[in-house]
Every structure is written in structure tokens, then in C-alpha cells.
Length: 159
Image (cartoon, rainbow, N blue to C red; front, side, top):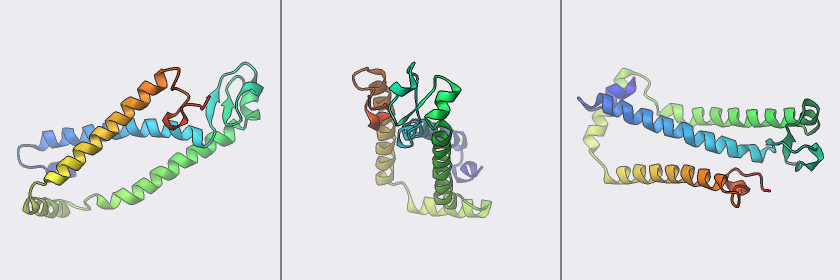
């Protein structure tokens, strides 16, 4: 619980709630982005009656045979490996930023208090939060509208 070690005295619960909220927001964005990666590997499901009516970059979901004929197992395996690869790369990049011990937490807290508050960090964090939330809302709204739901850049099938 490095959060408790790094939090100012009396603000432990508030700091923890903030970290949990940011983590939950990241999960929402990860869900949106991972869904959009289905297009990159051609694993978007197609529910047309005739599997031949499905575009080549989709997988027919009408029957087990149609699913296999449209190379569904391979496409979903590729998608799974892509997501796992992204998670491994993310872990390799971000785990070094975690404190290794309670002593390191205490040192980081001391250094942070010496540096003081930063308007630039606050504005950067606010802008990043607004961009992420705006993107999630925009993608959701555009996917609900028939005229824009086919746009591939938001997760549509490119109808």
C-alpha cells in the first residue's frame, strides 16, 4: 500500500480513492481501445445469415462451421496474443515506477515535499483526464448513431 506511505497525513483515504478512481478510468479506456483492436486483427463478429455476405475482415458467428471457415479461431488467437503483448510491454514499462520498499516510499515522499506543488503537473493531469473522458464519451455516442457507427477509428466495422 504505497499510497498510504506517500499520502500526506490525514489524506490517506482521499489519496487512495483518487488512485482507485484513476485505475477504474484506465480500465474503461482499456476496454474501449481493446475493442477497437478487434478491427486490426479482423476479428469483428458478423451475424449475417449467409457467411459469404460477411466482409473478409470479419468472423462469421452463425455456426461453428462458419466460424471456422472464416478463420475465427486464428483471428481471436491473434487478438488475444496482441492484448497479452500489450499488457506485458505495459508492465515492463511501468513496473519500474513502483516503489521497491517502504524505505523508498519514504524517500520519494521526502523528495516530493521538497519539490512542492506544481501547477504544470496539475494542468497536465487535468488535461489528460479530460481528453480520456471526452474520447470515451465521443466513441460511445458515435457508435450509437447509425450514420457514424461504421467508422473504423471508433471501433465500427467500416460498413
